[in-house]
Image 1 (cartoon, rainbow, N blue to C red):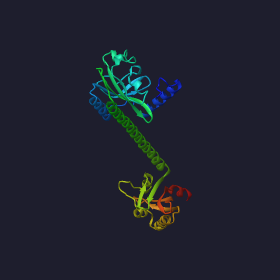
Image 2 (cartoon, helix red, strand yellow):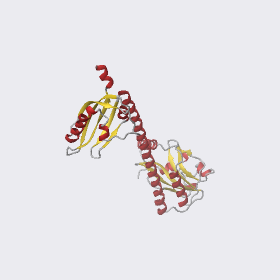
Image 3 (tube, rainbow, N blue to C red):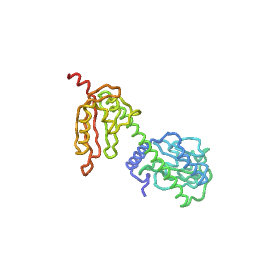
Image 4 (cartoon, rainbow, N blue to C red):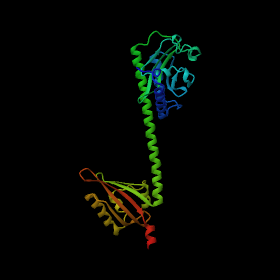
Length: 306
């Protein structure tokens, strides 16, 4: 297996850039404490009977702890991080006695108040990238960390990896909802300015949906009016109602689009002239599934033309 130490410099730099990019994508560094990560960390400390356990993420120049037990700091310099070695290999790293390991014997975390002697860390991955580790630490050296222990620590680290992925997915969903809400507001503003609305008819379920613009043209609100094929047609002037109905029925039966101009009687009794254009969505067999289109208030335009 090629380690970071063995790999060419350019390859090490590529992997580091990829890893830091994964951390930025996760948007987890310096985030607030979250119960699910705290629970895994407490479980690790309990399972391995260690006074210290942590979810460590390796940033460019620091080691940052997403969750920890037995530590009074939220980060340490990267050059002091045992976990910086753990992310170099996709396997559990074990140090039974740090004072006898040349990599760590002079480490401030070994010589200082933290007094690290035993360390075991399993990599945490995001996709194919190792971004940190779940580690357990003792202030007393140990003589063994067997295969079963390694497997249990690996399983807990995989749980952290899954939690991070779920966390990112939830962030993306929130972002999508936020963008949709913003786009909806922009659409409603455009509808208001242009006097246009959008509608949709589900032919199978016989349901009708109106945008805010359509409600505005009718002088109605979603709170007081629930459109369907019958009451939507009743909003048109009696002399125009049959013609509008015929257009809709012909489109639903033949799968052809249509357009018409007709008088609309608003809720306050005001009569407006509207233009509507509809299209048909069909299934693979050519059977109409739904109608959709626009409704525009052209009263002002008609007045100017007159």
